Image (cartoon, rainbow, N blue to C red; front, top):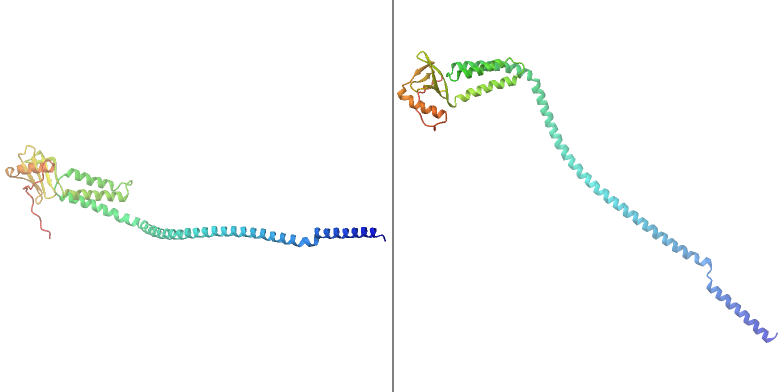
Length: 266
């Protein structure tokens, strides 16, 4: 073989081998690249899954926190309602007891009414008898009050309670008469003739009169139930001053008046 031809053929073989080696170094086979890519993708998927799981955990933790707070709030409300219900139950028990008492009272109303009416009648009769036997002051006014009570006792438009209240009011008025000093005008039979006089009442212990011309003075004798004339020289000025005191025209003072001696109670 020609040496020049051999050299040329050797160069071509070496150049082909060199190109093959270079190509083999630059081109990575597909079977070597697939596992790395797979590993990276698996890692990324796990990371994404972990993030999603953490978000779910955080959300569940927040929801659990909110539910716990709500549970505590509801528990406090329940405790408050228990206390409130307990107090309401006590009030209810008390009201039931009151209702029971009212039922018992209502059941006895008829019996009480039957007892009050006769009592009211006896009280009116007793008051009338008392006025007749009492010192004869304001006779007309007191008799009218008693007649008023008698007329009302048969009225159907008045309740038994109202009739009884009116009788008690009359007793109260009579009781007040014994505590006050009073002056009023009226008439008295003096020596067979009626005279205009000024009366002076000192509770129930003294009832006196003095004519308007101040010339005659007298007093009621409760024991003998009649009027007696007084020594005008002795009592004239005293009675005049007492009348002014009763009318609140003079200051209260110690006065000498004819008063009946107290009777002994046997």
